[in-house]
Length: 384
Image (cartoon, rainbow, N blue to C red):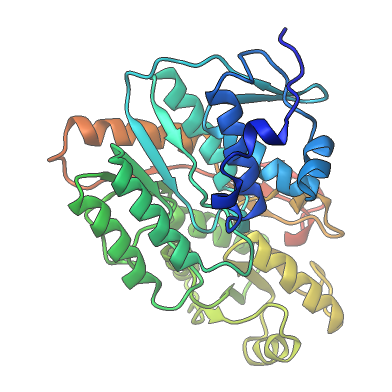
């Protein structure tokens, strides 16, 4: 096992003046990359601890973890639980160089394990994955960062880019289309992750890897109907991704299959007490299918404030099965995405596209699992 690397300012911050305008985690990332590149940190060496790096750079552990995660996804280090972060041997890469363009990475849990799957599959084939700086803080401009990454990947002449289109921003379809077309015109293959660049049902000319959201919406609504629900509604935040439109389409199909008339989808802020009270008064729902878990959690909190009990008064469900879903006061019924499998499938889709550029555009959709918990009225958890 190699020695512990000591990070000295004179060795790794020679370009600090040019990096001062960057976020702190990027400064750490650049410095550690340079340490490895100049051989100060060799294969098997242990990098300084998160606490030590945090003290040196005057940042929190979360900021340090952000930098170390990017090094990990780039295949430069290995993070071992309870032991530390170790430099990996340099591999001769005779494969492709790919880029990740995921502007909303920090807002949903599905992309990090998806990227892990891509990194794992990429290393097996000798391909390199550029993580870029696609994570951002809440006050950073998603559109600006997405175009910045697009410029960077075009300059680097990567073979392909995995692009998760922006959501929850005005004019998202136009922005997403421009980014995808810029990459394509530069001769870079594009594989879309999770969602299309257009609102459903319009289809782009790019391959897409995700789950079958129409089926997912159907499965969730059908489960609630089997529980005796008679007045289900569908709820989402505004400016959502096209995946939500597909989930609602599946919801509508399931409701109509029971001879019921589905209500229009409701869009708004789940934390807005007055808005939620108006929805309840208008639709008198006995169940609410939320577009994702984050929306469901906020909605359950609001319902509790206005005196509505879940699941006794209204049953609630979500999508994605985030880590905290099973640890809420009322555990949340959700649909679990096979995130790592999606990542590995995305690599396969990209390699297939590079080998056969004239193939028609494909939707490669994996199944998801219904995880039943108390929020839908079930007393026990089970996975269907």
